[in-house]
Amino acid sequence: MSISVAIRHAFGGFTLDVAFQAEEGVTALFGRSGSGKTSVINVVAGLLGPQRGRVVVAGKVLLDTEQRICLPVHKRRIGYVFQEGRLFPHLSVRQNLAYGQRFAPRRATPETWGHVVSMLGIDTLLARRPSALSGGEKQRVSIGRALLSSPDMLLMDEPLAALDDARKTEILPFLNRLRDETKIPILYVSHSVAEVARIADSVVFLKDGKLVRTGRASDLLSDPDTAPALGLQEDAGAVLRGRILRHTDDGLSEIAFSGGTLILPARPEAIGSQIHIWIRARDVMLSLAPLGGVSALNILPATVLALRRGEGPGVMVQLQTGEARILSRITRRSAKNLGLKPGMQVYGVVKSVSVAKENVG
Amino acid sequence: MTLLDWLTPEDWQAVELSLRVSLWATLLSLPFGIAVAYALARTSFPGKQIVNGIVHLPLILPPVVTGYLLLLTFGQRGPVGGFLAHTFGLVLAFRWTGAALAAAIMAFPLMVRAIRLAIEAVDPRLEQAAGTLGASRWAVFFTITLPLILPGILTGAIMAFARAMGEFGATITFVSNIPGQTQTLPLAIYSLLQIPGSEGAALGLVAISVVIAMGALLLSELLSRIIAQKIAGT
Image 1 (cartoon, rainbow over the protein chains, first blue to last red):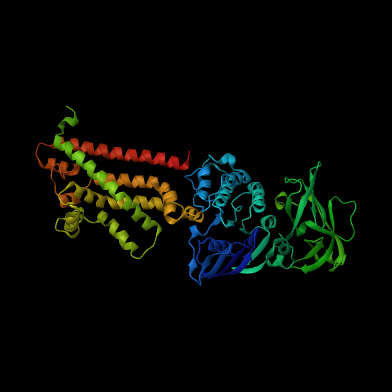
Image 2: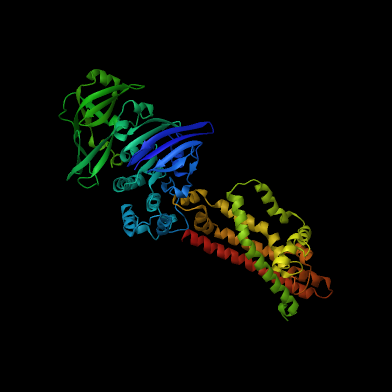
């Protein structure tokens, strides 16, 4: 199931000019606030009519300004999870969820209901009113409501932005399950690299209403060229995909990835689960020899792929380890002292505890 | 001797007539009131300000003028009145039905105002969300907007009812002051005050007016609170 979006729309001195394709899985629309991310999904949902545009989802033309096709919102079958949940205050959680089902052409079966309710962990909330829910609970109900309308596609507009860190950590595992257990393509708006790294399969980068780059999340985030262009100096990092090997009794988890084994603080996921790990460039140290006598548990053999000098005293080093790419941000002086050049064999050193819990999932 | 003993059967007739006129005026104008309020609050169309002006006209025109305009339009020889009389046998002039029409028109602006405020207080983003879940505009209205504005509708209806109970000028101009037919409570009070020595009976009707008005107000407060609690689910 694929999505194709092309939009040209000028409003109030701002021009949105974007075209991209997305496949199954989670596609992150990523950019700073004001880059036009929300406008893009509003066009897909039909809440915003662009001057020119074409939107095709799963072979169905939702919008084509040239052929004068513009399906009304309620006929598009696009689930939308809003930033603020937007639960109906006069309905209970159960009724809110049922509202999603009510207008679906193919009624969700009792199994779907049970699956969605248990996947999102909202079975105990059904009798409550939205006013009696926490922010995270509201957002989970809102996701369930959208899913039960059996949409062809799901739009999520910064669903975590209104939540505090604790709530974010609470809800992210549900989003990962959503990604892994449903086949619905998801467009996920976010301005947080950590979120994108954890959730997205591919990324569409927007800046000032224009498309900057698009591609696989792991490739794009670990590209030393894109990082500074996106203003990611502090937040630059790379995504590794791995599988949980075992949980040790000293509170750690071992994760296999193409470059070896990574040791992280204990993960809640079961052995064998696939996870994304986001490693920030500034948390990766470089060494020319395999270090002994250090506390860091992860010493990954790697090859230098590229060095990119940014503004200031920093250098971004891209490393290849197995099939994965990671980034390391070090000072220009260190790069000079080590004599780093593309093709050199080095070791990337990552402290286990520097990989925060919310950066894995 | 209690206050109520002063009242003659004719006085009671006036009370019954007033309640009937006001009830019908309120119930029949309610769907229109909701429709006009929705159009004014949620849609934009050419001539919206003109519609808004016409709706509010009875509030600012002298009631006698409104009554006379009603007589010209809905009288037996008026364009609409003649049509209604010929086609449906429905005569409004000098009948209680005409009193109900006059009361409805005079109360309409108050009703629309209250309902419009309630609609404007509904977060349009909720209606948007319902749309993305597959609800058409009509379905959104009946499942989201209407339940959320029930307290406003109730307030509007009670205000309209109270205004209809007090209608005087337009009624006396349009349907005259016929005991048992068009003599509502205010008209009865006015007539009694014209007769020397009837101040006692007038006072009885005045007391009844006060009781009905207060009762309506308290009832609306109570119902609003119950509905608001139901909506909040507490």
